[in-house]
Length: 151
Ligand SMILES: [Zn+2]
Image (cartoon, rainbow, N blue to C red; front, top):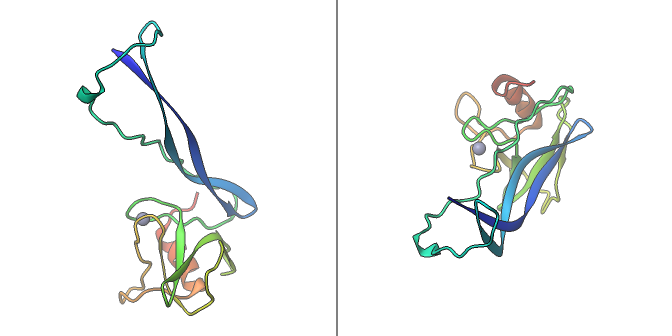
């Protein structure tokens, strides 16, 4: 056995949920420096052509929100990042969801008509019972209350 040591950094995404900054996802970004160590901690050379690639999947945070705030939980991928898509291919992330329908957004590219709300990670679209896309903040609140188990 040997240890492969990759130097890099971690990027964590935070959103604001009722006044608290909560980490919703994180990525490990590998740098160029890779060292190999023996079990005794000595630097060794390894034939890397025989090494099977292992990606740097980190455990994503599970959010426990004890505050009264609404948390989007994607039914497909469990992401907490919600995106508001406007007509003309503009979109911005919904960074805060208040029960009264007053949302906060990340940098808004345009202020057109809201077309849909969807999961930022996998594109899951919030829809009504008739299958049409939800384009109204208060309906988003209702949808989250019905579909996302709030802690
Ligand atoms: Zn998703």
